[in-house]
Picture 1 (cartoon, each protein chain N blue to C red):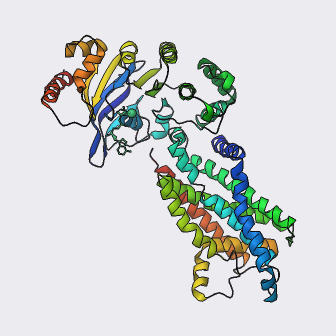
Picture 2: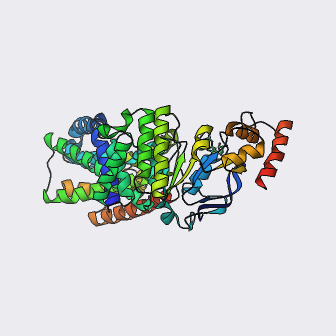
Picture 3: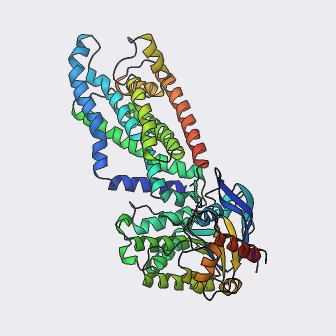
Length: 248
Length: 266
Ligand SMILES: Nc1ncnc2c1ncn2[C@@H]1O[C@H](COP(=O)(O)OP(=O)(O)OP(=O)(O)O)[C@@H](O)[C@H]1O
Ligand SMILES: [Mg+2]
């Protein structure tokens, strides 16, 4: 346990010392939130769908977490390039713990960023439907973040250079995000898009958070939760497997 | 002496390249063993295999009787290592780097603190212990890495070009300390270097590797005698050729090839 803790702590210290990075990573989702939220609010309301600002907040929180977490594996590449990874790989600790410690650090950061966005949304007039459900939201945020960080760590363990890593993650992040229902409701879209969205794990995370934050859901919270749990398990196992096979 | 490191018919290939080619040797407990060879000879690859970072393509290796391939976890407890390339976390302080290492090696908190202080003072970085490592000079980083490699009282210390980039003062200080550890704690030292004088004055025995093959092994005296030279540098050049690596065999090389066979089969 102490091993996982110290590796988690390492990431927290690095994060705290990163200064500008902390601020910058919430700016992009904030722009989405403000521009789209206020930009489309009137049209959305005219269509009889209620407040778009309300609707988009869970999507933007999911986006913040997705963008922070899916690039997490870049830290593994840095650890390879700056050599620190070797220090952990020759230590008498299991690779599973090495992976988990780092990934929990990344997941914590993802959740912090998500919460920062949530607070900003509150300031801009977001209305939370039930405060107790916020706890559940934090759990969902943690699951999403941990799943994405694990996935990204797994890729980081396989790939050896930053350009390939960025190519792979950039290739994934755009469709994951835009075909997830983060920005629009899933009920009135063309069948193909709907089909894609329903095999996109992020759709379920967004949907789950919409359920807990504004009490709206497309798939239903139990389904969301089941899919999220399944995805989390698969991605953590994938990452542990890749880590075990890492040579330096 | 009992062998604490034994390497048996070890080969490592990268594609077609035989980076390490059928290498055999043993190192006795408490020995100071120098592993020399030109650039690209296979020194670091051998150390990486011995320290579980790379799997051998063939052959077997044991550290204190533990199979390095089959019992990785147990093998990792036995050694400390200073890699050829940097391996510190620049975003952490010197102390944090040491502490993290202590935790990874399961050291108890109290012992850890005392040992960190002792070692960081020894490498004369105690007044900088709370500085981020990325602001350290190359030599300071190297000293810290050496201190870190010693933290958990390893039985074997692998040092891959530990003195690279260090000034003469620091090199002397370091070797004096390593020798003391060797004498007091019986720590086995396995190191590589391109400073032949270091090997000559420190090492009990020397192995020379070239193109992945072991070409000679013995005390500095023995190597000098076998090659009919009067210092290790000449012996080394006699054995490995004065040409920069990756040349085709010249006639001088084929003569050396003969000397090699004689020595290895001695
Ligand atoms: N991961 C790798 N993939 C492919 N080739 C490699 C890899 N690692 C090492 N090599 C090759 O194996 C050979 C031996 O390399 P190694 O690093 O062991 O040399 P060395 O003796 O440590 O040299 P130096 O004194 O320059 O550090 C070299 O030809 C090198 O290019
Ligand atoms: Mg080397």
